[in-house]
Length: 321
Image (tube, rainbow, N blue to C red; front, side, top):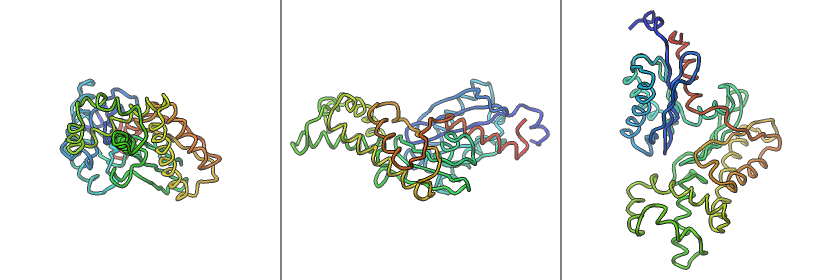
């Protein structure tokens, strides 16, 4: 299909924000107007596998295209911010899949951190720091010269401190210690199995062995609820998590020499807004990192920021009209 034929048709663009638990998809027109949104399952291939990631991306895209009565060939640009795409091999495999699924689109695959930063500061050239707290955790920043730095986000076995996965794992360990009289009593003990829909710990153990990403993050809302109600064990877990998250942000701020500058710090992720205490603890720890920093709300959804970047890619290729 020629560029001239493309130019005669309205142009549409897709933005993806894919993580270890869910994927957001945003369909926009050439003016950046959001037409439809969709949410699907996980698409971080390092945690969910490539087959699951591809299925998720297709499912989310199909939903928004059907709502607008579009075909894959109507999409002129795609930007996908995917967890794990910091590895070149991951980014290339995801890009190849999207290029084949959307043959008329210019495709960019980047990290979910990069599009979240753009969503936070509203400009791909503006500086700032983001703290992402979802299934995993990470901090990412960019200075005025375009230099970037990151901390965390390297998987649950030796990173992702303060994440929903980490909090859930610590909560389940606290229940075990309490039952074995090796730790303090906690309200978690009487609620954990019911919360997970299990009758005994053998079922939970089998579930954890099969898919820990499907178990530990589920526990976070229970910890958040009980922490706000004053359970001392949950309080301690959330306090430690907030401190760990601040350390991630501190690492990025130090690498970019932002300690004494007017910067913005934005928070993003599925754990936010679940616990008044946890949110306040994170803010308190962040406030001590850079005295002149301003903690801000996200300017838009990361998937929308990705879609807008897709428009810019399309313009460079002559596809946006």
